[in-house]
Length: 312
Image (cartoon, rainbow, N blue to C red; front, top):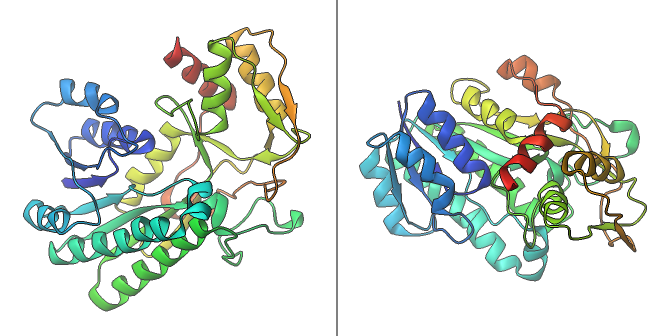
């Protein structure tokens, strides 16, 4: 099968490219390299020469549309996004330009190329806002009430996908992701907390913990996530599906786990809680099991060990 991956040089996208190549698909990668890196695709290019092609294009451009029409992919995995909540608050126009207008451009390109399906990387962490604690782990039946511009842009993208499915028969599945972590996640600057903790402790740099450290998140390993994307190419028609473990892990527990993996003796530096941060979060994986026949299998300890190994 011929597939196209937007944002395929990014953290999750490059792991998805590896998986799709291993399955024997012909893979077109599109990335503007604003946050992605060709280094993330070096192994894929070396091992699957002739099966992968990479184009440096912006999903907002007409050149991107013409490229997709020429390629005629059967499935488009739409991973490209402005993914920083803080950036969305500081520059909501940029966020909307990439996440809303960019997604419309992807949909138009797919429609014109007679693409069968789009599999979309949605955000489980922002889509549902802040449900009451008795609703954890969050199910897909919870109202979508995002509290940031980034979350709103992802919700609007879902509405456009539903509209294109109804009007043009362009199928889609949207995977609402929990806190994804794994090798290739940038430990510098704005990145996942696992990458930051592991990168710092490997380099013997103290970590920061904000608030009590008892705030929780649902950490899901990247290999488990790309397995869900692979399955969604042929399942979950017109569905929004949570991809998480359903397990709450506190920041303090996460830190202790990374400390053990790195054999570090460093104590964290404590800072006041950041305003607007969710207190607790986890996503129910029950629908993913039913619709995609998917479950996560990588424990936090196993996943963190792989992250640490990739940094040393």
